[in-house]
Structure formats: structure tokens, C-alpha cells
Image: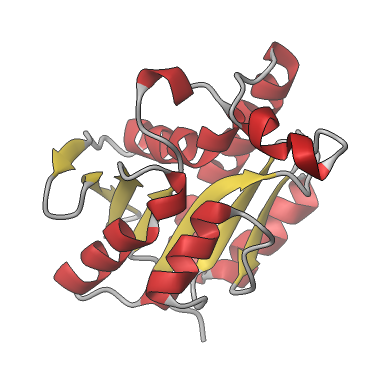
Length: 192
């Protein structure tokens, strides 16, 4: 039995200098959902996050962008889960994924952090029972280059691929809300 989606968390870094970096793919996704479903983010000090509520197929879904920097994303997510009494298992966390090439986007259920510092902190504060949306950004080729790679501005080709992926993932959000993760995963993964 699938759980209904109640919250989408986009991971990223605040500040304009990070806005178009690869590491902010989660923010890009949250922004696209707010645009599509008529939400307007506002800063909520109690969570240290920008939040808004949207309606997807008639169901209320919270959107959140923690403003604590990537490696401290867990506390804002935990604060929202507790305040709104949401189940971690009904939360989708969107993030950049170096293990997927640009032009690839995948849903995943549960799992580890794979070295992603934002996921690592969310797991530390909330456990691992949440859904993920992994937006492929590619790998720089060497592990020592990962930090500088994800914190740089996306090239026009990579950005175009990421935006296509974000559109495709946003297209299946009504299915995720209505039919659950497996149905949305099948639709997204066979079309991508």
C-alpha cells in the first residue's frame, strides 16, 4: 500500500551565488512545483526554511527549501515534520545526484546517502524512510573534484538536461500523489 505524499523538500544552498549551481537541483525542482501548482514561497523562521502549500490533484502538499545550507538540511526538515505532524515516509526529498548522468532523473525509496551531505543530515535527523528524487548532474571523474564540481554553475547543456528532467518529474507528481511511488517511478523511468 502506498503512502500519500505530504511534503516535497528541495535540497540546496541559500544565497544567490549558489542559485544556478548543480548542487541546487532540489531547489530548482521545488521552484518548478511552486510555479506549476500556484504556490509562493515565504521564509518561516521556526523552520529556517522557505515553505509554501500547494494543491496537487486536490491534495495539500507542503513544499520546503531549507535555508540552513546543504550539510545542515536535516533540522529544518525535522522541524516541519514535527510541527505539521507529517510522516517521514510521505516526504519526497529532491537532490542532485552525481552517480547519474545529466539527462537522467530517478525516484528511489529509502536507502543510504551515497556520500551526499544533504541526504546524510536528513537521515541523521529524520531516519531513512523517505522517498527521493535524484536529478542526475554527472560526475567530475575524480572524488576529490566533487565539491568544486557541484558548487559550480551548470553548463548550458547540463542545465538544459536538468530542466528537462525536472519538467518530466513534475509531470508525474499528480500520479505520485494519486497512485503512489511505484506507479510514478514506472512512468518516469520508462519515459526517461
